[in-house]
Length: 314
Image (cartoon, rainbow, N blue to C red; front, side, top):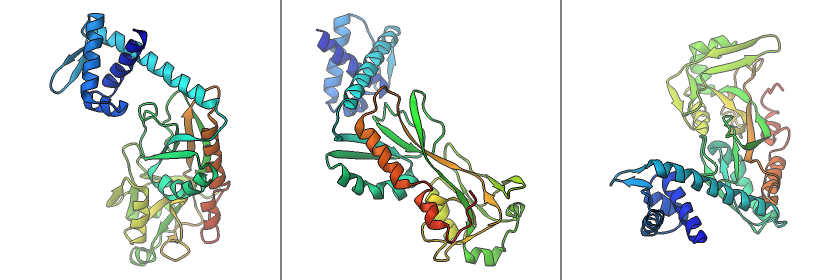
């Protein structure tokens, strides 16, 4: 009886959490008919209607609201128990579900995964790429590598690195539009903007050791993918305020030229390893975080590669 009820509570939790039978079935890897049958049995056994169903929506009844809170407590208890048991294991194996900032993950973490797999052949890495805040429990993530500073409560954010910024444009653009000599000159230039649902980089920060400035810039191109800002600058569309992690050979090969080298682009972009707060961290999680920290380095390996051709002010 208790085991049946616990299983039904997990199903009911998934149904409400995912707002539908199809999504709930997918999350639990069962059929839609199984979800429907178990919810019906649950309501019959307790003698109370928990949800009002229409062809398009589900609405919790008052009793359903109360019952769902108990289901959520059960779900969180089971999840915490699983985490605690995982942390007791000495071996580095099984699945680790990792969320990555899209550009940073593609450029710097995914290329290193093969090395990680060689170190820990029993570990399976499942990668999810996104640039917005997520519910880590709902997405079933063990680790989130992010530069998003709007971090969830109840999680630890371990700072991994800081990416610096550099202002750049292509030689063709500078020949056509002229070279800015002080930050305020950028007002007269076409500035390439990174903009997403959570960020809007239209204020560019500078300092030269004596003066701090913030310049409001504008341009005819904005995009929500950081590499696309870099690529637009290489194509001669305008001036870009680029995180240094985006740059590889563009300065060395002359595709980009540093603009305003006497001024430090003083924006910093911290990257964090975010994971649930718990008494004992699973060894596979700590191993992956240490691997990423070592891989990035301090100073970061991309800044070390850049320092021969770009003036970076620390």
